[in-house]
Structures are given as C-alpha cells and as structure tokens.
Length: 75
Length: 167
Image 1 (tube, rainbow over the protein chains, first blue to last red):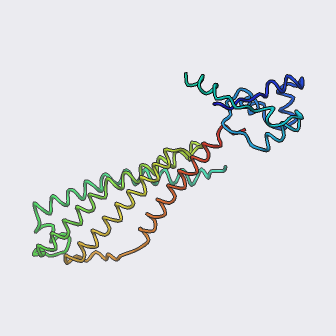
Image 2: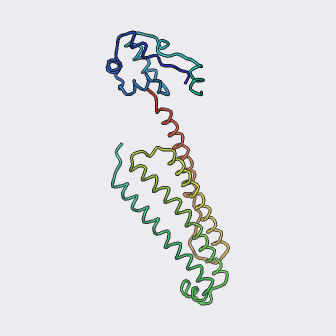
Image 3: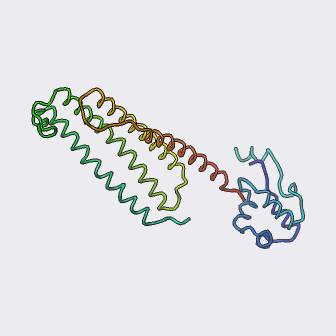
C-alpha cells in the first residue's frame, strides 16, 4: 500500500513505547501493532484523534503517501 | 452472541430427518409411477377405489408423481444448504460468503418449488383430480424475502470484511 504509517518514528521522537501508547489511548496493543507494522486496512478518526492527542502531533505526522512503496510491493 | 443450543439442535435434528425422509419419498413416488405404468387398474382400485379409473385421471396422477419427483432434488438442495447454514451458526461464525451463496441457492430452490406448485395447479385444472390445490401468494413472498435476505447477507459480509483490519 502507498500509505505509510510513521507511528514508530513518532513514538521514538516522544520517547514512548507502544505499550504505553496503547494504555493511554485505550486501544489494544495488538491493534496498535497492526497499525504500526502497516498491516491495517483502515484507521478510524477516533483512533487517529486519540493517538494525535497523546503524541501531540498532526495526522500528517503519522501518515504519509509514497507511490514508490506500492511499486516495490508489486515487484 | 447467545445462541439457543436447544433451538439449534432441534432444527438440525429436524433437517436431518427431513433429508433422510426425502429418499424414501423419492423411492415411493418413483415406485408408484412405475406401478401406474405397469398395473394401472390395480392402482386405480387402490387409490380411488375404482378399477375403471378414467385414463385422464391416471395421466393426471402420473403428472403429479413426476412433479413430486422433480421436487426431490430441490428439497435436497434446500434442506442440505439450510443444514449447512445452521451448522455455521453452531460453529460460531455464520456471516461468511458461503452462507450468502447458500441463502441464494435456497431462494432459487424455493422458486423452483413454487414453479412445481404452479405446475401441480395446472394439472389439477386440466385433469379430473381432487387434490385440494389452491393458489397462494405466501410461497412467492417467501421467495422474494429469501432473495432479498441473500442480498442483505452478501452486503453485510462485505461490510464486515471492510471492517476487518480497521484500527
């Protein structure tokens, strides 16, 4: 998929672990892990809102669009 | 989701009995049809208490028997698909694409059964049979309902697939 999730980078910048984030946004670690590894097919606005609130960032800081990623997947 | 196990097991048992009864029914009707060809006088006496049953009456009875035989595979398809759906409820995940296809198949078989019912009505009208047949819209409404439900099921399954992987 051409949409990249940069949750790992944001967590690193905020010195926060995935478990901590899971606790603070009240989303299961398994679901956050799916999001972090780019395996999620969709993200709810409520999830985005909760993560952005806790990490004090914008949705654009978490997501990026890179058409080259899709081409790499297809190859 | 609470599934009433008693209702499910009773339904499964009833469906299994009906599937099993479908076979002797088919054999019985097929046997009757053969007897109507080989020994029509005896059959006329046995069924309508008249040895001189009119040939048209016998022809009408044979046609009804053929309609009954045509209903056997339809009933088999209907019952086995319904049993498979009930089994999927018991297994805990009925909202699968296979069940949408099964429901659509059930709708088609129901349509076929309704067609056979009409054919029976036509035979009753054309031949001097006293089968107490009367037209009814219930079955046709059930056909429509089944087709609509199959579509609803299909859309529901697609919506669930969309939700899978949503965080």
